[in-house]
Length: 340
Ligand SMILES: *[C@@H]1O[C@H](CO)[C@@H](O)[C@H](O)[C@H]1NC(C)=O
Ligand SMILES: *[C@@H]1O[C@H](CO)[C@@H](O)[C@H](O)[C@H]1NC(C)=O
Ligand SMILES: *[C@@H]1O[C@H](CO)[C@@H](O)[C@H](O)[C@H]1NC(C)=O
Image: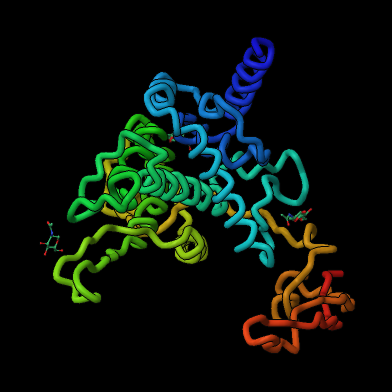
């Protein structure tokens, strides 16, 4: 127990030193936490998971105060990775941690389009998981402000999906405010904000009627978030519409001319990154593509191999003995495509 604790602390400090050396600019807790969450692909849910990401007094304190947090962070991490892998399975970048299978080309080394996206994705997933944790009763300290209109005993946690709490909590946990004001920090803070806002856009009010035969004389309403997959759709749009920014050299004596000021300004509604993604065509050999159109892009024009595979499904279903549905199993040969 003690050895494993020391060991993980050791790993963490190595990771931090390593990371500080490689990424441009400073490496605040925000960056380290996003990286640690997205990098750990283990499925383990073990007590004290919250501590794995603890590199700050603030996070330790939040973990102590909220015993359900560790479990929620693991769920948030898994939800983010699963949604990413599903959504990008036919894209050149498929949520891998390195480009072109080269350990040196970590997606966290610079601020690539993918790095920007992951900051938004992880922030969105934590926000979503925390807000859900409020309605499921897993979290006890939710404010429930603005998440429901009138108290309903049917809601186990006493409130709906508490987005406002999730947003505040996530920013606190990522130490958003403490991330700094240098240009890199501003970019990552914006990327995190975009992710959180995407979740907020999924908030809907649902109502339940009470009264004789659905007459709806009284109703109870609460706020509910859509499934994370629908947030993922919006996040992927942001990934495609991300904008590349150049760092402005402040150290010159030059006054900030309107031209420089224009360069420093960015569209607040877009993901921002700094570095062009390397060409990923060398790594798509052997990847499965979806259809001829997708294969043309994914295989980078090298062509693809058509294979046959058997897929079984339920078919010829009919009702028997009044109330049971009986189906056969049909096996069908379908094409599948692999990049050359
Ligand atoms: C619940 O909220 C609705 C409006 O959404 C209101 O009409 C109703 O009176 C409220 N019920 C209670 C018990 O507060
Ligand atoms: C910023 O500008 C100064 C003065 O022109 C120069 O010496 C310095 O190398 C520049 N820094 C970067 C990072 O480009
Ligand atoms: C992503 O692609 C790489 C090859 O570029 C492959 O090795 C890896 O298994 C893929 N990952 C997933 C989750 O499909």
